[in-house]
Length: 137
Image 1 (cartoon, rainbow, N blue to C red):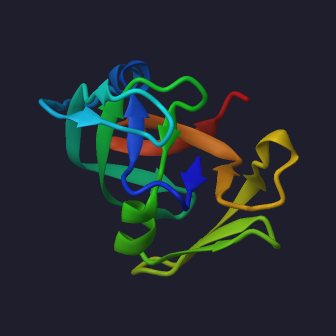
Image 2: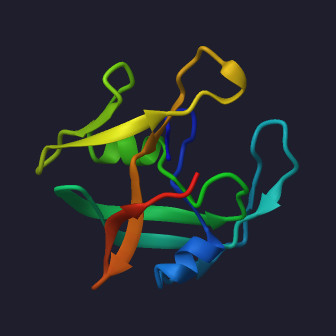
Image 3: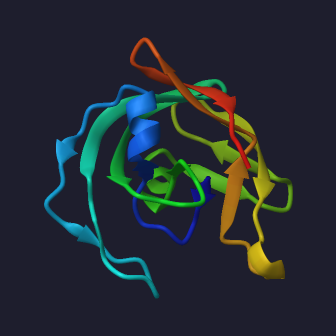
């Protein structure tokens, strides 16, 4: 999931363990709007991620989430020069290896505002890289 309204990149503990990511223990708490503060489980620093023809380093905050296994936020968009194209249902990475990734638009409860796009494929980790795989809905 790519979410333009989220500052950092998040991953669930279950997904991080499944990808064999290592994290440093988190001592902070996270406070999402209109929700109770939750503890940060840990921080994954500079793991390599591959999406389609692009790969690069990324940081994750390991937290408990209900809806998605992974959320890429503004930190990812800005660091890797990502341009979301909601009308075309694509995400374009314009950095050193330009890549176009097909996406779905998520509009919960019939909202007309686009603030998030779900990548068609998820991620799978092999040989210290995260690779595209299928996301569950």
